[in-house]
Amino acid sequence: MTRQNESPGYQMLPRHLQTVGGRCFARAGFSRASCMNGRFPRHPWWTGHYQPSTYFPVNNWHPQHISRPYHYFGPHFPAIPTFPWFPPQSSWLHISHFNMDAKGDEQFRKRKKGMDDDDHRGTPWTKRPYPPASDLRVPPIPGTPEVFVPTGPQTKAKAVVKRRWEDFGHHSQDAASKETFDFTVVSYNILSQDLLEDNSSLYSHCRRPYLFWNYRLPNILRELQEMNADILCLQEVQEDHYQEQIKPYLEALGYMCAYKARTGSKPDGCAICFKTNRFHLSLVKPVEYFRQNIALLDRDNIGLVLMLQPKTRWGRDIPMICVANTHLLYNPRRGDIKLTQLAILLAEITEVAQIQDGRFCPIVLCGDFNSVPGSPLHHFIKTGRLHYEGMTIGKVSGQEKYPRGQRILSIPIWPQSLGINQKCVYEPPEKVQERPERSLEEETKEKTDDWTAESDKRVESSLHHHFSLSSVYSHYFPDTGMPEITTCHSKSAITVDYIFYSAANNEVCRQPGSDIPSNGLQLLGRLSLLTEQDLWSVNGLPNETNSSDHLSLLAKFRLEL
Image (cartoon, rainbow, N blue to C red):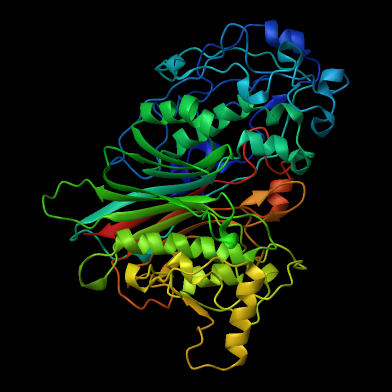
């Protein structure tokens, strides 16, 4: 039953996704010993309705109203099994005394790395006991007797912030007489545990128990399962956690997974996972931005591109969908590196997504771009053009209010030896001339001399790409003008995560700037974002129920066949 003043799509969301924070209760009177030695509920904690739990997040589904898990987008989405994540006999879930008056509960940033708790002192966090993939089991049917957890006057509920489903289906053309393919996409930076520990100052506002991987993992997996998206684009996926926990879990839910680790010694990477009952895999293209002989490209960021063929009941050929996922360099002062990494990714997409007569298949570009809305990099993605003459490298991403990188972008930004032109397309091999490597200062001086000579052969100081890409999110709330936020920690609350897509010709939010027409997608809906005030009302990110410092992005698209 739809509540008054709610959109039709609202009731389709699991209640977990309508709230951020506050589904668990802290009871100060419980000691760690009583938590760890007491009986743990044996009913899966994310499949049914339970009394408020002292130990871990509780889902607020009501089996008396719903006999199966919520599904977002109607009955055509197949129901998926749910899987519990039981702790082993010697519990892997560390519960701290919430008064934080014991030595083991001192503030996270003051503790020595690798010395988490008394049971595993000296063991690195990433090596702590956790339930293996073999422990996944089919849960009992919702509606079975509830586990009783005593509550009392010391129990205190946290604040609740709703995320609502925004339905744009009424903007799309009537598809009753057309062949269409609807699908959903998630982009989510899940926060690598190693990066969390290496940057602990960003999470000084968090309760220490909420930062342990053994606490965070079930929350992340539950969220991915409840969103039930057809395509998942994940960033900051730690490789050992991916291989041993995340991949087996998602495969059990019917996903096929592709992963690209960052180059060098970095522990994380990007993953794209898709439902095998909705897509065929046509191609996997890992993208490395590191170049051994190019000083500008000495960073270990990566991207990943997949070509997916939709599965439909129609026998004729249908267009493939290009799905790209990336995590660009964070450094706010190195916009030159960010633009070069983006140019490499766009060149790789051009290689695989181009079809006959110069057109491109539909493109979905997801990731953490470490750039804010309205910045030059964001403007370039959406419009396909960027005039960068005289632009400082610290201004490219817009991450800092007072940019510290004051060096002017060179013209061109990257050396010719990269083999990519100013249209973000690979040059034919015969046009790429081998040149001896020089320092960045020498290359900049040569380019400056060429420019001041006003040669007719000078390089254009503009970047272009051929895709007409629109952003799923508007980045500002229309009623208040407040900015939408995708990441929130102790030092900032901004938007850096995006889902871009090839908009159809009749799409309301289609962006100008496409030189070559392409098949497009219609945006049918999205999961709303939140304001900074909303997030700090639940103590920012991560918190009890949202175990990353980023919010997940969720969108639904329609492809006309």
